[in-house]
Image 1: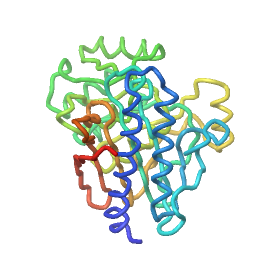
Image 2: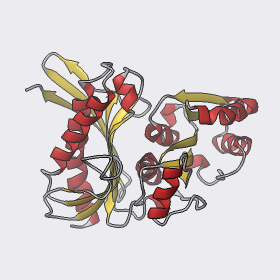
Image 3: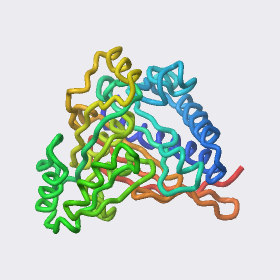
Length: 317
């Protein structure tokens, strides 16, 4: 299958997968059952994958086989017929947001030709992401002030009008203080740095940069969309525990290398598919109107750079 036909056919097949996962997770919104919400999304995503004619391999997903019985890193999905693809998946990005009814949750898949997506353990990475206008001026490892000032100039904004998205974590207290000292705005999110990292590529989001440490799977997922949209993300492994360092060693990875979007998601045979579960900066969440379930999805194709927004009305069974 050529890159174009993979884009056109499988990208739309994958929308059905993220829609099903999103609908399954949405039934647990606000019920305080994080594991059940995640389990419902995982089960539905895996089941739908296995109905599609392709040979998929999860290169970064729910964790190791010992930690996750389904959609674990290394698991094979699909019928085994058709193109061989690498997958980065998060059936429920922002589990706690769904469990506690907070802002921003999506079901998301990144797919690419074999060898295109970084094969890595489920650990943490330090990240810096910007949209197309600031993609070439940001510098990983530089002080927040440097990147904020460079971004402001690239966007034609005052520093005080620049908005930086950061996950609300204790580890980010110093980072947040440094950002605030520049005069820039801080948008704190409880979870969901896939959407947070992609948001600078979407002018209507009012987010200009993402900074901070988040999960490695989310870095690969976000990089796929960011690369296609012309932005940039830099990421470096940032193990928070000794077991994380052992995982990196096992995969022959180190915490010194800085990965760009092109290194996290190589080539052009790439697709990014997401469906909203709860309203966020990228997508509206699942709506139930009478006996109809309404979903809002996004499909980004690497070959063409096309961004499609798909609203689907599903009849409840």
